[in-house]
Amino acid sequence: MSLEIALPILLPLGFGAASLAAHRHIALQRWLGVAGTGALLAAALWLLRSVGREGIVVMHMGDWHAPFGITLAADLLGASMAVLTGLLGLATAVYSLASTPIGHERYGHWPLLHLLLAGVTGAFLTGDIFNLYVWFEVMLVASFALLTLGGERAQMEGAIKYVALNLLASMLFLSAVGITYGLVGTLNMADIAAKLGEVDRPGLVSTLAAMYMVAFGVKAGAFPLFFWLPASYHTPPVAVSALFAGLLSKVGVYALYRVFTLIFTQDVAYTHEILLWGAGLTMLTGVLGALAQTEIRRILSFQIISSVGFMLMGLALFTPLAIAGGILYTVQDIAVKIALFLTAGIIFRLLGSYRLEALGGLYRYRPWLGILFLIPALSLVGLPPMAGFIGKLTLVRAALEEGAWGITFIALLTGLLTLVSVIRIWQQGFWRGLPNRVADAALLTGERRDATLWLMYLPVAVLAALILAAGVYAQPLFALSESAAGQLLAPQAYIDAVLGEGAP
Image 1 (cartoon, one colour):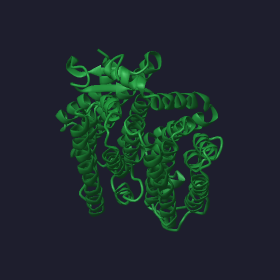
Image 2 (image 1 turned 45 degrees about the vertical axis):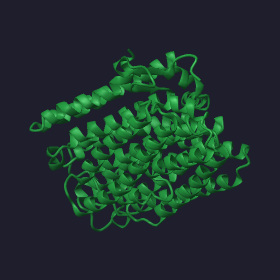
Image 3 (image 1 turned 135 degrees about the vertical axis):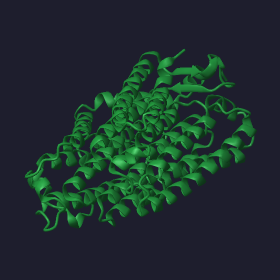
Image 4 (image 1 turned 60 degrees about the horizontal axis):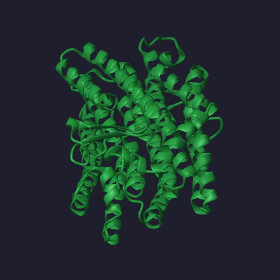
């Protein structure tokens, strides 16, 4: 039994149950939050090590072998995403110690955090299309509850938009799952891939592919049904916003990569051309929306959408270099987004606002905060030596090799406009003088100390160091992305691992 693949799911569920049992003891819940996310990171690293040494790791629950039982399967992509889930969960837990309101903690912040991480990890490691739907719903329940904790008007408005669009996507996803079962008689993704090629109904298969594309595209925040994301991600406490920004939309991207490299590869010219158009429009609408905003978290929320376009670009081009570039870009972008949101939370603690017109003086009084902002911001733009530069360069090179001039132009234009939006934050928040009215000038200038502020700086500093290291020493991460892309584009190894050698 491959216990290492089950632990990243079981640990957050177990710690979540323990945290719920300790609902009257906030200090114990905090300890369980940090310990649980640390344990998740350690278990995910163990899984990644096993996948690197042994190849694809598979576990058949209850010893009911595929396609009849529930299967967990981890390749390099799934294991890497589980590691990132553990890393960002730990960063969020530490940051939450200093930033989450006590009222939110009393009403379930910590159990919901563990439940959300379990849902995300389960989605990355499941080998069953119906259980992918189940884990999506676990994520939806936990994230909706986290969005509404506190019951503020802005939170409720954002949560309604969030849950309405995501429920629509879930209904479409479940309908697609039902049609899939009726078509091939199985829900195991490896078995679907093996049997779908024998189905002599190309029109129905293409329609089914479009249904999955729309459902996962909504979850990812892709064009045109993305407006729920910037309307909701800026409303909860900043630690929750950061976790949403780093992980939730990436689960939708992961699902697209999994399904459109393993299952729907019969008509690439049709399906992936749609994905390419969607990628370009997602980039442009996201970055233009960011330029129109004057509040840091809303700017960053639209930048999430823009970045999803780059991730879809790698999948749509469907070459080994493009897939590797898409994976590399996704991995670094997860760390970049959460680092930027957490930095925004520190700015709010110091100046009492997220609005650009109310900010200023940060580089003079908090130069280290300026550096911690610049590292992920420059990676977001795609400037060397940051990891984002390597990812974008790989994607652009793959597009040029395929003669995809249109998406290349859009990617370069989006990068330029992203630079403009980052310069706005830097100029108004960091470079100009201290505004006349700030929430606590004594805290900003260091005349009054905040005993918990270091807990907010620590995870940002660690993430910034990892982003910088991933750019300066890019070869190991690029090699991992190439290997993961190779597994996705040669799915027979995944099918054999799940179904057994000699599978069709």
